[in-house]
Image (tube, rainbow, N blue to C red; front, side, top):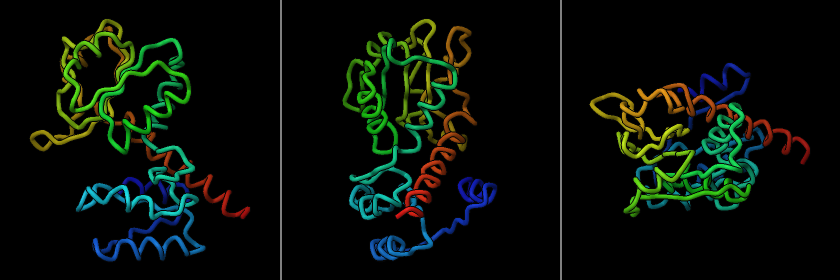
Amino acid sequence: KIKLKYAEDIGVLAEVVETTDALLPSVIQSLNERSDVSGIVIQLPLNDPKVTGSILSLVVPKKDIDGLGKDAIYDPATPTAILWLLASYNIDLRDKKVLVIGQGRLVGAPLTKMLLDSGVDVATADDTTTNLRELCLNSQIIISATGQPGLITNDMVPIDAIIVDAGTSTDNGEVVGDVSDEVRERPDVTITPKKGGVGPLTISALFENLLKAVRSQTHD
């Protein structure tokens, strides 16, 4: 709904195409071939998460504005939003120790690659990591995208830490992040808000990719 509203606000014609699992590949192929479609987003999660990679890669790269296919030419939206956010506060990542918690397809894995490609000192953690507290305490910037409510507790956060909470999940009907409330109460910690932080910038990054796609296809 937010994507549709944003599209309307900036004059983009957006359409939701609902289909079945069986017909999804043929629907994507049809959209690939339509000259009046400049960008395609596969709304995740799919009913069968195991086929996510293969489905995402059916979108032709020039229309893959989510940047999640194996041959993507655009940067994924949420990692881009996180980097925009840090840059807007003049946070220089090159002299910081950065920890990315969660290595999922949407955020953690592509963000880690983008940071490494930029020469940033990056450590990673996932659901197999056994020394998460130690990794957090040794980091100056913590970026978490696991969807585990309250995963990051106060005793795991070093003094003057910068935290980007990109995790979203539902707890008792409320949308929550990965960072516990006690961390948010600390005056020394700089952290994204529960709502209105990474999310709106993610939508902006998505439509930035769409504009790039339109320009590119116009010149084809």
